[in-house]
Every structure is written in structure tokens, then in C-alpha cells.
Image 1 (cartoon, rainbow, N blue to C red):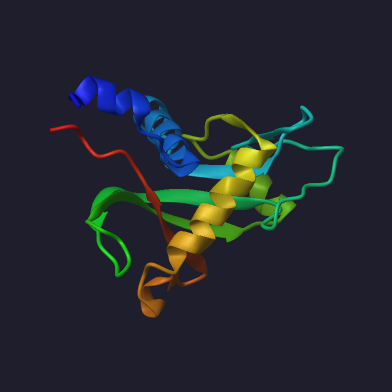
Image 2 (image 1 turned 60 degrees about the vertical axis):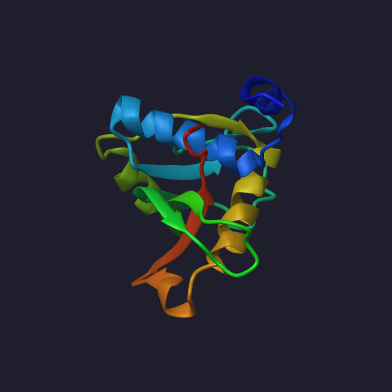
Length: 153
């Protein structure tokens, strides 16, 4: 099977697409920190501070996510080969912190369906277990990995 036909039949986890979108935003708008909160539109969540009349079904409610290391390779037991990833740090925040963060330069809006937000949370918590326990936290930040596409060779 040639590379073009293989890429048409290969499926990727949603995590890869979320990471691609975050990296594109980081590159085009110099944004590395994102405030994750429910959006105003039903069924949407925004990677910025927005007020929502609907309660969030998100485990984290509102949190800040920092793309700390945008490109690294890691391996772990249970993985067939080294994986390319982004190192992500995140923590829950309250409304006062949201207001302060939203005034900082480099924060861009990016809306995702609510189900995608839940998949992002699942990826963060699941992939955190791939790190050694001492590396899963840094001060008051949770640390995890989000897998990203590897270059085609």
C-alpha cells in the first residue's frame, strides 16, 4: 500500500487533532496558555474565558492549560514505539484567576464541541500515567503528554 492510500485509511485519536489545533494556534498567535471553560453556545467549549448559563459536565470545570514543551519524543511500556508528544501542564482555576489570565497577551479563542473537551480531559489524565510519578506534577501544576502527529518520512 502506498503512503497516500495508507493515510486515507489510517485513523487517529481525537487527541492528535486537538494537539494539532493547539499547536497551530500557538504558532500563528504566539499563544501557549489556554483557559479552558464552557462556551456560550450550547454544546461548545472555548479555550478562553466565557460565561456559560449551562453547567459544565467537565470534570475539571475551568482550568488553565500550558503547552510547555511543544515537541518531544517519549516511550513507555505498553507502547510499540516511541511517540511524538507535547508536554502539557494544567491546573484548575477560579473566576478571579480567569479574569487575570484573560488580560495576559497571547490568549486566543478556540471553540470545540463539549465532547471534544471531555476527550481532551481523558487524554490528559490517561497520558499522565505514562510519566513517572515524580514527573506527574510540578509545583501546583498537573503534568501530562498529548500525542501529536509525527512527520512523514
